[in-house]
Length: 184
Image (cartoon, rainbow, N blue to C red; front, top):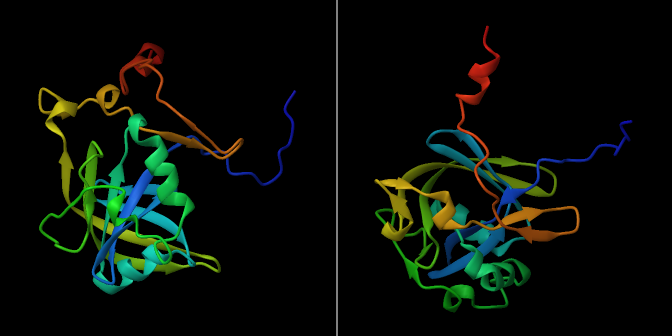
């Protein structure tokens, strides 16, 4: 029997990301899970309006999306617990820059996406930033035959119920193949 949960968003787990933005000339990082794929080169990030990071995104029209590995769970959690307005988070990670020069990325993260802001959508308590991915970086140790190997990346997943972090399980099937078994 199904039980109604009310109006509840159950799109979790979501990969945890660390958003990088240059604020007042210094790298700042903020942990969020609310990231979306708009198309193959456009992503969305949703941040509460109170976040210090938003200021840097609006000022520079750039941001980065960094995917941390399991071994960075403490640093990742910390970056989302404190505000860059009162805590200098530039020392938590080693920053590097790509062609945009104002979107700090995290060297320790396996994957980094450097983004150019293309639109901001206002909600009562949140701002959704749409970004064009200008360049993606991946540590060579996370590649197999030139492609990212998610099992090597070991991303951190966030689940809202229980506010907990999880790791990735194993592959269960190949996409766009297993369903062919049902084609008559």
